[in-house]
Length: 517
Image 1 (cartoon, rainbow, N blue to C red):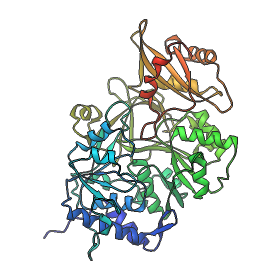
Image 2: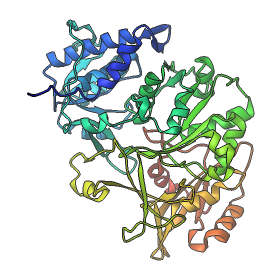
Image 3: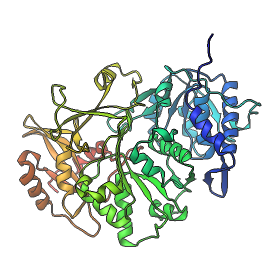
Image 4: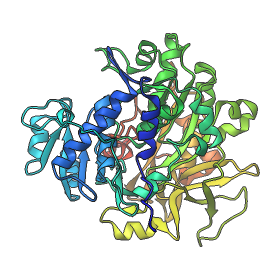
């Protein structure tokens, strides 16, 4: 006697929607979209995808704005078992062509993303509209049929391709199987780690913006659905008005995700002209490390609402630090939290051997929903995915209480007279100065030393750092080879499409700054 296999991903999301029925799960401008309406959208779009011969193993690129229809389209593409590649809007055309070359059969688009340039880049591929789009079939208009959507994804098939930021070249596609997606925690309250459960209690009105191709934005949207909250879609910012805090106030957001550069801007704006953020209860900072002094300042200015998350595209969440943990033990501000029980973390030495608490090394992790490799990158896959572990290429240490401390990127180094100087410690020393809001270090060729350290500094609001003081600070704590050859003051750091500081662009400006800053 055989039994039918239990439906896999995204069945848990479909169950959450079915259980919600008339509960509002999206606010989009003047629209309120309920759970049963999203279920209907998923069914229609899935039927349209099947009619377009998209099923298990078919590559589908999702290039959509933020809307209930976009969320439903992502879920529907998984329902039919496709290999779903989320594409961030605004990618350079050469990066987009690179991504679309990964055996993509169809591209899902909407009115916000279709441009003449996009049509040119996608020539020869099938365009499918999510909503009315000139010259393309509208998937949302497909009759759904009577039966509820039934996931067709096979456990070992690649279900999702999540692309790295591409700040050091073409984006790498991280491959997650349907089994890996099914093992994720977001849609399953019984799997939530303690820090995530704490955060979930504040997701009444989760502000969504940017792109659902963002792994973090989408995962915490699913978490909001599971927590019984509403995803509130941010309207485009008004001309001349900073996106934050205006969007938080206008949409009465209780929670959102924020990058380190955006957090610095929000803190500065609140210092200059405080907005009423009384509804805000959780801001998850992700994407790059945050200096303890800047984290403490954010808690002081914004209140106990800042969560500091650490994860990677390859792994998902590794650790999270809650406001309560920071306030209870201020020394924890220097950490990124304690990894939950379902996440294994090892810090290893240069020979790959685990080290004891307090000793620095490279961080290796295992998470339930980690990727299994990179698209068409066998060498890189072998280097990063090793023995069931993911080599993060971040340096760090675990303290005696199990909290993880980040110390920089293993590859983010400056080789000065054949001596490796890690950028992370230099950035932390610079950022420890009260006059500095953000600090970024890059390497550049040097005739005398092979490479030299160059720093880019965003001054704290109303401050003007003294470059000589900063150099002395670094020299005293880390030595002469780590001392920046130049210090360039910038109003804000350029960011990648993922919202992370773009060091490649910073390094590209050095030819215009030949003299020390």
